[in-house]
Length: 383
Length: 117
Image (cartoon, rainbow over all chains, first blue to last red; front, top):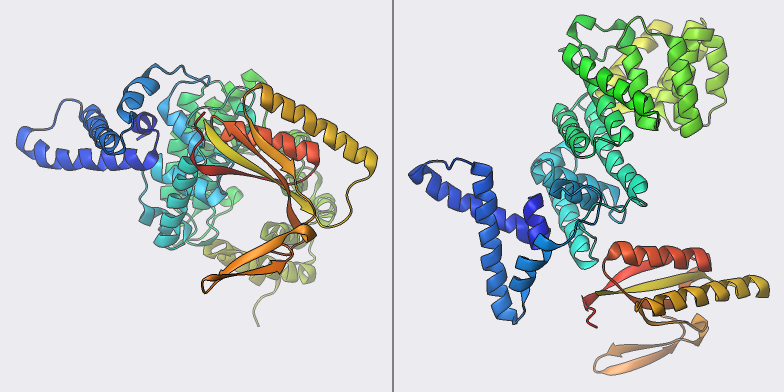
């Protein structure tokens, strides 16, 4: 898709050409056998279809589209630092001029290979909504001429941030779904696949490696995190035999590679924190130090909340509660869940119960609700 | 090359103080000269207040005329620039500079047909 989009300069035309190529393949391959390089065969056939199509249109409109198609893209100098079609496509799909849901849908559709129906199910919206987002985004790319290239070095940090945010959002939606199912594995797998692709294409960007490491380390605990009945298991209570050792080794290795570059960023630090958790017993002082670093880079109330959780382990729940109470995060279910746990540990069960209830009303995730309800019955046994 | 509209939206109310306005006008002058020397400038100007606008509406083969702007709002189109740019990123960069120079929100929008020469 990426190669053809560059040739066609238009995502819609490229998609149609690929469709046509598969149609030809469906007719020919059963008869003539599968060619030695099936992917290359599809690209070549689709490219020929594109040229046919451009010829037809060129004749009809009396334009020189064919000449443009054959000459311009192949000889055009690479404008960005990394000359790869897939990378260009990622940057186009994640362009900040597109709305976030459109970026996510477009990335999953064109780079993840998910169908419109699969994206709709994953995000619990209608298929028509996803289709409309994709069509609208493609229309804007074409009409406003959103460029199909890797941004220049000057723009790269900001634009790369937009790409990483899209991949991270896809992963988070899979890992901690906003509602319904506790984990949607297909989204996690797709995000990791995109993360690997980015790491392969941009191996010198530490935040790219950091995001991949973060996703691998979190995903390594997948089997231990949710019981077969769909119950959420907290890190401290997990059966470590279920952790995926290969993913942990790969994630920790990536974290070490990042550290050597000494250009820390939010994803790398989150990955480092998860790497510490992957070596039990957790070195909580190290975790607090990493959150301190995170606070200097991205001082948000949510980071402060997570830091307080670590402080509870090093300095006790009373110190942590004072930190939590100073945060303005009333709408955030984790804020109430953390407060409730700290109050419970301090023996203030009468205060903990309403905090658990506040957390319960602020999450739609069934597994989280279930965990919070279990805690609530600990502090206020049902009559 | 493609043509883009950079629309500047300004709030209702009095114009900025003379010194502030002068700074804005100076920066707009710099931007315009840069656009002209790079061959990107097509047209641009500020508009009179919305109270000077007249609206014409077709109705059953006739045209009705009313005083005032098409839509009343807290913000209105205060002026615009039409420029040539190779792609949206280039147009957005000019738009960014207009937003900073005028301290106003701007809308960058592509024209429907190719720009030509």
